[in-house]
Image 1 (cartoon, rainbow, N blue to C red):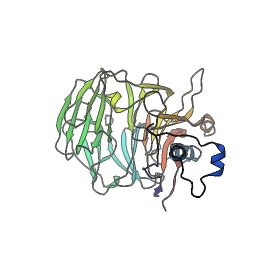
Image 2 (tube, rainbow, N blue to C red):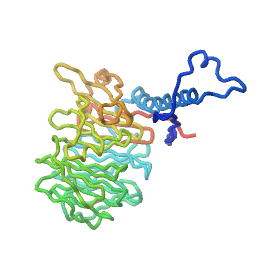
Image 3 (cartoon, rainbow, N blue to C red):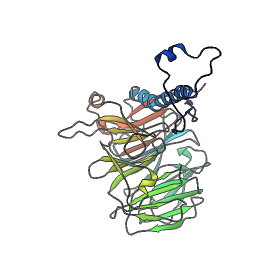
Image 4 (cartoon, one colour):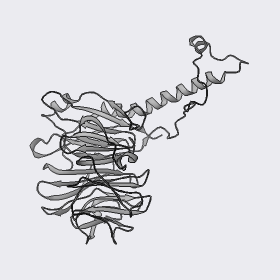
Length: 392
């Protein structure tokens, strides 16, 4: 379903402080400009500035509010009938398709794709106890994923057409495609990071004695960031070949870059607390990470906003709720706005004691967000919300 969204060129006016912006008063607002009158510049600036500010407010709040109030808690288990150890999901606009890959307790790894995020087709990729998997990526033509000691490729964008070829360097843990530099980048269980122009011939770029916690890519700056285990060091690059190491402030078991929030969203492994940082901060000598005091259970990222779901209950505080993170000022020093959308503990409770699936990260798009909840009878159910309007 194609989704109509507001144009990216928001009509802002008089926002840099260089012109006078004066409220004309309630009387003039009621009368308006009359025939033959030359509108005062400061009054015109006030009107245009106010219109832009209100459009900005609608753009930043309407979509997440619609999604929050339009949740379909299904009883279907579209991806698995057994509890997954790990779920990775992302929407690739190149193919206008959604992709999910899961590693299960039964040790198999299965991939799914969907045109609408609701109906899914699957393909079992491997059955091995030690297997690992990356998320799906594309170079703009083909579909790729790293599983165990293989890289899989589909020339049709469908998971049923994935075929494998050897990946000699090691077992891929995470893979990104760097559009800026036209490179595939993979971090492996052997402690190395490799890059490749074609996903076939790989060159070692980073060598460590440890493995990797996570890796993701900021397409706006061409920056790829990975965190090493044991030392917790951050490694980053802007060209895919030359990497810089920075001391990491803490261990994070998950982190993704959200384009909507213009921020990295990081989940602290020890207590589930969420931190955020822009790319400039996260690659600094002393990474400036901002705690938002949310015990993160799952992150759902969409082009228009980033949802942080908190489903953790402590002995003193119930922190179940939805938070929308958006790329606008007024949130600490990170240039983001955090919108609390209300408690949703009752929504969990009415679904057989449903709980969010911890440490899951869903990169969605095109008018739908989705995630897993519950775990009733060993399976995990699909919850989804559609937002926006059909394209005219």
